[in-house]
Image (cartoon, rainbow, N blue to C red):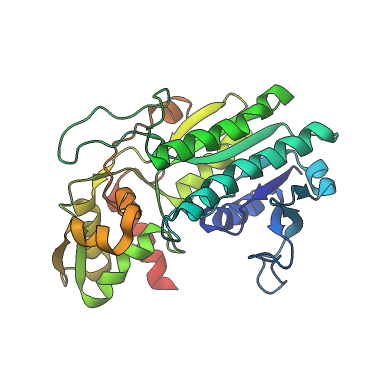
Length: 320
């Protein structure tokens, strides 16, 4: 039985991924902050059965070495939420530092301690890419493009660069540039659904911005494929085959959740900018992202279209 050590394992992706890894027969250890920090190790009631927890402290640059030495693979998801708070100077620094300093801690621990880690799989984001002009056809962005010079582009560049030194330690490195993750357990889909409680389908801005998305189940399967397939290395775009506009996603979600009982309403870009400040840049960003590299490596998506993805998620939610 192989052991997977996960950072950021209690977040949106980590929670679902941990459950799928357990089903597949892996032993899972989640690194969590020690008592006194913002997050604590979950109690038995809060944690998922079968998952172990170990302590690390990124600020103090300490980590449970015994847990590290048990790991065959590391999945690195840790990082402060990009949309969680207003982008003040201090929070921008936290967004970057939480990613780069956690990578530095992993690398330093691997360098200084004997271990059997073969693979490091690190999360990144499609914020790497330069935005497209909404409403115009653009060639899909591919992995060898340079990072955008925006805050999110620079964050992704520093994020990926910070974990890159593991390759010099003889570890296979796979980086997942993840698009908008569709899940019933939080993230963007939760925000899209909120107006639907009032029968309103809220289209953001002009609705023409392209969204490159992925169903949480496909994303978990992609991470697991990165563990098993030793031919995978480098950066991969974790997005479904068919991106959609914000308007298309919003109307399809309304249809799947509410049938024909909803009213489409455009939320002007200037209102989003007033409400969210610089974070509105991410909400209004248009990016058509290619997944050709991962599909050429043999990965097959279960949810290729937004209709299939939202139908599945709305069906599952209705059973809860």
